[in-house]
Every structure is written in structure tokens, then in C-alpha cells.
Length: 529
Image 1 (cartoon, rainbow, N blue to C red):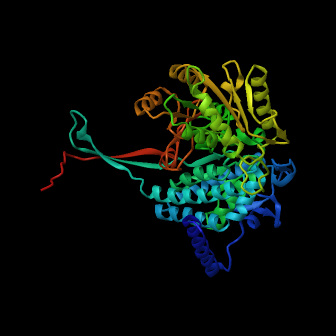
Image 2: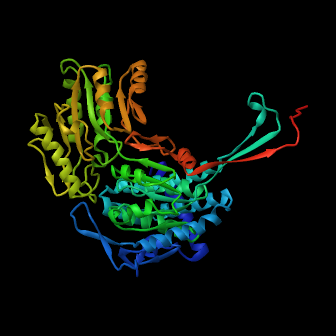
Image 3: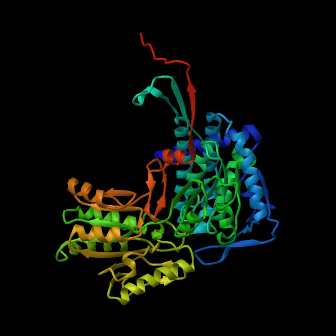
């Protein structure tokens, strides 16, 4: 048993014992959130109450593995969204007056609930977004760790005292107390690919800084938001109205949510829809991450074994459905001298990946989220092959069963192929050879997206110089693109986003600066003797 697993087991036992001592048993996150105890149909969560929508409509949540219905969620009305905002606004006024240590206590209790009910929450993630069991469990535990860290980091946030005499010509007769204050009601919209972790990365900082939340989980991942966030915080004892979770089609309620008159900020993770969201919101802060076309640039002096392993992991983790997946490899070479060594290493790594359903043991590649995504991926591959790209894998040609796509490696990618610039968001690795680092930089920076990039080289001078030239929020040196650890800053340039995420930066994003100036009747200076 590993140290992390052992620690998790001990923590779970302690929490279960505490629950038993206080109330006989911890409430099940599935039971509290579902309709009449039916663990297939789930309610909305508004003002501390679980209830079906007055619309009388439900939406089907389909399994990516076989397109069968796994859950139903409510189709919330605009009136219910109004109710959620009213509840959040009232709760926020009280929550802002709650001491920091009490806010931290709620986050830590929620983290405990996540750990004790990791199996149920992970199963929902598997059902909804087809993550392998190991990855789903990891996401739950990672989110619990994130909440704990956010609680601790939030306790360390502090203001500052400014004196007027630090500005030229001024006397020391003014003192400015500068502090961060809550924004108010935060609209949170997480994506399907990390439906729990990227929800937690929004909810935790929002609550720790004194805000209330109205969250709309993704349609594929809606139950994860209800069970893994709303029910978890409900069981943890969150005040009524502090967290509200409404479900429905983004096309029906998305704009109403993000443009609501009571919304004080929007935090959104997703695709190009975010560009429209950003244009639609008014004078409120927005925090956005909207995808990436993350290049991996391989220089001639790179450690090719390291580069190959990093590229395979970066391209195919969660079937390539990650904003930080390797989306294009740019090999700097004159006459295929690097490709002839690197490509066999990459192909060897890809051929070891296990393809299957989310419930199979030790599977690496699972179905993509839906048929629309699968069609998009195939279209990009067909376009590249039709224009001369070589399909290295799968042997025998493109292979797909339903939404399950076998990992695909393409070489000979050129700029007139869509795969050079379009984000595939699936298990497809395009590889291009370029003549110089300048050409690699030009291609990388030509993308409208600028989330992350990787550089593989053993020359630190080249690494820093190229990193400086790349228009990307994060540049990885000798490693695959990645979001995390969760306390690292995470941001996109250009159409990849606005503002930064990462615990400390999200805490700051959920607040605004307020100054209180004390005007003294006369100059006053400190006497340290």
C-alpha cells in the first residue's frame, strides 16, 4: 500500500468515525441529490433545497461509451435561475461576515466528504465522461487536496498599509488600509473534461474569499457537479444559498446566467463558446480558459527518449481531451535526422496504450465525449490524409467504434492542413518537420490560441530564448503541457483565455481592492527607539 493510499484510508476512517459520532452516519451524496432516492434522476440545488424543476422537463445524460442514457437532470427555468441568484445574494451578505477560519473549516469539511465518498463520485465521473476508474478516483482526491490547499492559502491572504510620504513631495499624514474584499455572486461554468476538479478550482477560491456561487455544470458532467460539488458542500454544512447548482442546456440558459443582473463575476472554462460569453458580459470581472493548440518543439539536441515519453503522455492522456494536450509536434531538423530516431520511440509508446471502455482495468484510451466530437476529429484526420499526411498509426488506417477512436499518429503535416492549427481535442497526434527554430516559432505563434507550449532541448539558453518568443501562458521545458500542480499559475494568451487560475491567483481573481484612507490632522512618523 502506497503512502498516499494509506493516508487516504486513515483519513476516511477518521471522518467516518466522526460522522457516526455526530449523526449516526454521513449522508450519501447520491441520496441527498437524487429525486425520490432514484440514483438516476437528479434535482437542482437552490437555496439549500433539492427539488425538480418547475419546467417538468429533464435532460438525458448519455454515456460516451455506448450513447445510452445513464442519468437525467432537470431543465431549469429562468425563474429558477432568478431564485438561485436571489438566494446567493442573500447568503453572500452573511458569508462575507464569516471569519476566515470558519470559511476554511467548510472547505476542509467538504474535502473530507469527498474523500469518504470517493467511490460514488468517481463512478459518476466514469459514467458521464468515460474516464478510466483510476483517473476518476484521482480527480476526486486531487479536488479534495485542492480544497484543503485553498483553505490554507486563503488564511494567508493579507492587506497592506501604505503611507503617504512614500510619494515624492507628500507628508506622512495619510494612511491607506488596503485590503481585498469579495466580488459578490460568482457564476461558475466548468467543463466536461475535469467536471469536478475544475469546478472545485472555482468554488473553493470563491467561497474562501467571501463570495457566493451560482454554478452551471456542463451538460456532459452535470451529475458530477450536483453530486461532487452541491451534495458534498450540502453534507459538509454549507449555509443555505451559498452554493446553488442549476442544470440545463447552455443554449437555453447560458446567456441568462452569465449576463444576469445579479452576477458580479464569471469564471468559465470551455471552448470557443467562451469568446461569445466574454463579449456578452457587462462591467464585471471574467476569468476564462478557452482551449489550446499546444505545440511541442523538439530541437536537434533534445533528449529524444524524454521527449518521446513526454509527447505520448501529453498527447493521449484522457484520450487527448485536455486543453493542455500536445496538439502538434514541431521537429526542428534539416533532413529527417531527428524524426528517424524520435518517431520510432513515439510509435512504440503509442502502441503500448490500451484502448477500451472506462470500466476496463488499466485502460488508457476511452471514448471521446460524444458523436459530434468524434466527427470533428475524423474530419481533421481525413483532411490531413487527403492532403498528403502519412498515417503511421493505427496500422491499417483510421479505426473507430462509436465514440471510441484508436490513437492516431500522423506525419508530414503541413500548413495547408487543418490539423496544423485546429484543436482536435482527441487521441490524434500530428507531427511536422520544420527547417529552423524560427519556422517553429512562426507556426506556433500563428495559432489564435496561446495556452501552453513545450520545448525539448538540453541547452538552457535556447530554452529561455524560445520561451520568451512563444506567445503562450505557460511554457514547459523538457516536459509535456500540464495544468498543475493546482497551486501553479495557469493562464492563456490570445483566444485561450483571460486572467489567471491556480489557487493564489484564483483567490485574487475572486476579490477586488478596497482602500480606507485615514487622514491625520498632522504629520506622524514612527519612532523606533
